[in-house]
Amino acid sequence: MQVTHALSEEKIQRFLAEAKRTRAQYQADAESYKKNDANMPEAAYQEFNLPKGDGVAIRRFRYLYAAKTMNRHAFKWGMNAPDDRIPEFVQFMSKLLSTVALREDMTVPSGFGLCMPHLFIPIDGPDRYGHTIATTYRLKNHPDVTVMLEDASAKRPLESQDPAKLTALYKSNFFWTQDYRSYESIKNLLTMRGHNTIDFAGQKGVESMVSLIRKDKVTEDYGYSIVTQGDPDARNEKPELMFYVIRDARNADKRGMKPIDKEEFFKLAREIAASVKRRAMP
Image (tube, rainbow, N blue to C red):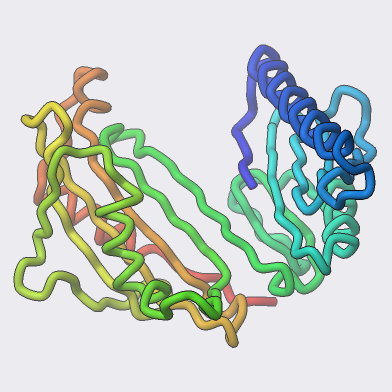
C-alpha cells in the first residue's frame, strides 16, 4: 500500500485519472479473456462500491486493486489472491475499503491493525494475510540522505526455492548488487568480514557499508543497510526488517548545500538505526 502526504487539488485529480486508466486496463484485460471463453476464471471482473469521485476499487480474476482519496491524502494498494482464497480476499478488500482511516502523526491506535504514515488499517488478525510495509523519507538538514525502513512478514521457502535465498545475508547482498543499481561500481567497506552482525529493533541483523561510484564515474556516495532474519512461526512478533540509508550528493548540490561527509554519514546512519524500536503488540 502507498499513501501520500496531503496533496493539492491538481495532484489529487492526476492521481484519480491514473486510477481510472488502471481500471480501464483491468476491464480491457477481462474483456479479452471473455472473448475467448466467458467462463474462464481470468475473465472475472467486478467493481467495489466507493463514493462517486472518491477513487476506484476493482478485481480481475485473482488481482485486486484500489486507489482512494481521503481528506486530500491519496492511497492505493494491490493484492494477488491465491486461487482457492479469492472470495476471502474479496471480503477482505471490502472491509479495507470501509475501515481504513487517517491517523494523526505520532499517535498509536488502541486496536489491532497496521500503521502507516497518515494511515491506520484496522485488521483483525493481520498476520493471517501477511504484510510488507515500507516508508521512505529524506532528511531536511541533509537532503542528500534518504532513509528507508521496511517491515514484512517472514516467508517460508517454496518447494522449488533455495532456502539460502531467504536469509538476511543473501537479501543484503542482493539489494546492493541487484535491486539498487544507481551506480557504476560498488565497493564493500567492511573488507575484513564483508558484513557485521548487530542488534536492530530487538533482532539480530546483517549490517553492510558500501561506497558507490555514480554513473558519472566521478561522484562517490555511500550506503548503509541492515537486514534481519524473520521467523514465519513467530508471525508479526518477528518480521523481516530491511533498513537502509543512502547518500546521493546531487540532492544537496542542487540545493546549494554541502553533502554530508563519509564519517558523518555512517555515524548518522548508525544513530538512526539505533533509534528504531518495535512497539509491543497489543
